[in-house]
Length: 149
Image (cartoon, rainbow, N blue to C red; front, side, top):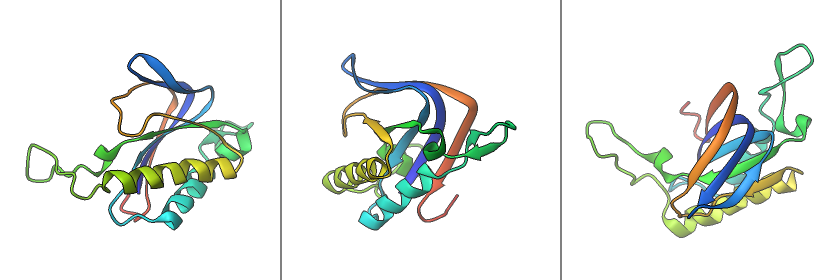
């Protein structure tokens, strides 16, 4: 499982011009699901991301987590995080999970965040979406369940 995590002051996702998910302060999580991913991976990623200390404390050091600041998460599926463009111009997506597996684990990831007490908004799995956000910092972190980065 791969995630691009961005600290935001606001974000929303639109499908066909209609807002399907919106948050104020918190994190946007672009989530890619790989073929080998499982339920424990989804739950572990939710715990990891919710505890990332990327929000500032009183001394302006990144020392607080999403849980600490009681922020929200906007979770958007993004299979292109598994795009492999090494040696070619058109990325290969063979490492991305098939649709139903990816959808199930995407929903499980969002539910795991909710279980931790985080307010979660989402996009629409598999839809063409427009994402609008105000990245604060800017802070962007890459997280990979296989610890590739």
